[in-house]
Amino acid sequence: MKVVLFCGGLGTRIREYSESVPKPMVPIGYQPILWHVMQYYSQYGHQDFILCLGHKANVIKDYFLNYKRVSSSDCVVSNFGKKVEILGERPPDWRISLVDTGIWRNIGERLVAVRHLVEEEEIFLANYSDGLTDAPLPEMIERFRKSGKIACFIAIHPPISFHLAEFDEQGVVQRMRASQQSEIWINGGYFIFRNSIFDYIRDGEELVLEPFNRLIEDGNLMVYRYEGFWRAMDTLRDRQVLEEMIERGDMPWRVGHDVPAAVAR
Image 1 (cartoon, rainbow, N blue to C red):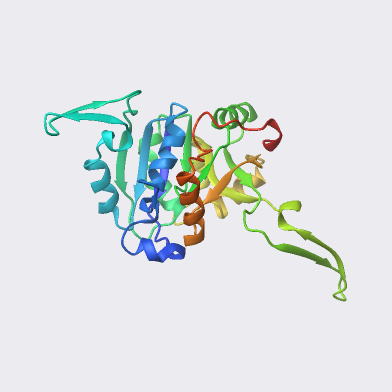
Image 2 (image 1 turned 180 degrees about the vertical axis):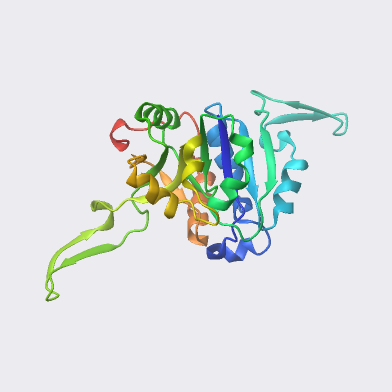
């Protein structure tokens, strides 16, 4: 199953890095967050990627054109570096389409720009390329396949803690509660689409606005509610949290991490 990765945004909320590299190339540990997102899909057998490039497209192209698989594997080097043996399981051989979809295009326009690369796919995956999760992808796909819907996205509680106030017309507070105790759910940026999604997108439209509203009118949009690990890298604080997790060896987005049955609904 092909995976469309949106990599062309300006990353204005993490400008300290995105002025020199595109947001998906901001490093988490020794690799950019884009690599971690691709690893997530790859471990489930989805290794055919379509990267929608834009802002500083050359940086992403250079990374993959000069990528050395040994950089992410244990290895033995001999003969003064001329011979390299990879220890353990060899890294997957990804197929990566690098497509420059323009600097100023929105997500909907970028998706339409690579339509020809997924036209043979009944179902394909897509991602904002700036967040990580341990959501069970095979279960998400199977639930979507059985639903007959056209589009699905992962819905998560906002990871930022804040207090919600409920009050009447006179301003008298009726209730206070933490955001995590509310029924507020947000788009987590992990999508599953049938190819007919393109029938709902008009020229110049943002993906989750007009097209999603048309899907809602037709009853063809669903969510996969998930209460497990999810973290986007929108700010320097988010990057710091993910960096600290990797330093501890705590990477729940890698296969082998047990997902409690209660967190997915």
